[in-house]
Image (cartoon, rainbow, N blue to C red; front, side, top):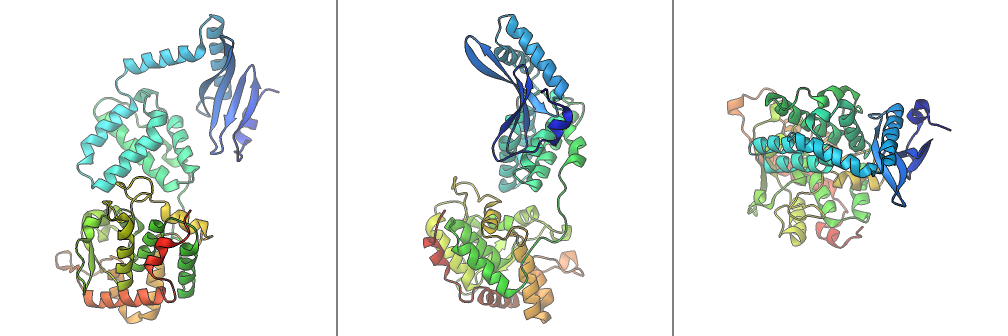
Length: 415
């Protein structure tokens, strides 16, 4: 029986791709990620071929049938519809130099020098991975809100809700640039903002007892996984910095650590990328390193010392670790919805404030927070550094009690 719009809307993805047949060779191909693609099966030159017509709902059921009938007419004239489509598309692209990828790369080149390297790499990588394959060759005037939304839905389905929102902002920035230079009339990415999957707000999930924190570390470090990820996760737990600061940590930032009072200085530019509060912007952040944290760095140096990054990408040593690596490690051991990498900040704050209630202000400084009553010009980034060092060591002793040394993670089970 022919398909109906109601049937298509109600169709949900399955583990494997499947087809919904409409008739006359037309069918809807449903991907595991939830994509719905119109395809037409036909024969040309004695061979069976498939013609991609477009994605639902950007191309409606009625529109798909019309496209099938038009392709069928081309076939009857003795031409291959797939070749005819490519020729038409090539002519359109040639007629318009303002394809999305061309304009996006112009926008990126204009702004890249104003960003830190880590952020610039993240911007262009997200465009090349998630946007250019679908939108890159299209003239700007052909990119409509449903087309943009279809790209973002694929990202949301991974699931990567925050990434989808960042990608939408970047697409929108490209269109804003194009509009200001007369290459586009509207910004379709701005319109779809309200149609995106909601981002759960509020405090991020975290374990808040010492026993649970130790159990979490033990679970992650006992599970088969890459030692670099395990060591990054341990350093994150020990320092309570934001995950993005660990992911992109370059060896050059650590320099030669003072043997008696090792201190890691996170530059203001990198702190700014991972901000929680605007008032924390614009300052370097000093992180006194416990003996246990130095052990982590000594251990990981044995396998990543030749990379520019302390915790490089598992595939490309010249790139930083994936922002999802530690999250996946937590999910694999059953902590989905219970604890996220960022949750170590709440874990540290809760436990240490219970253990050392008189040091609340110092603990806030260790988290990189500016005192509410601090005068901008007089704020001292090294305030209470000696006490912060003592608390960092106390936290390491509490957290890693009875856990194996960092170097043992180099020989643990791998995936």
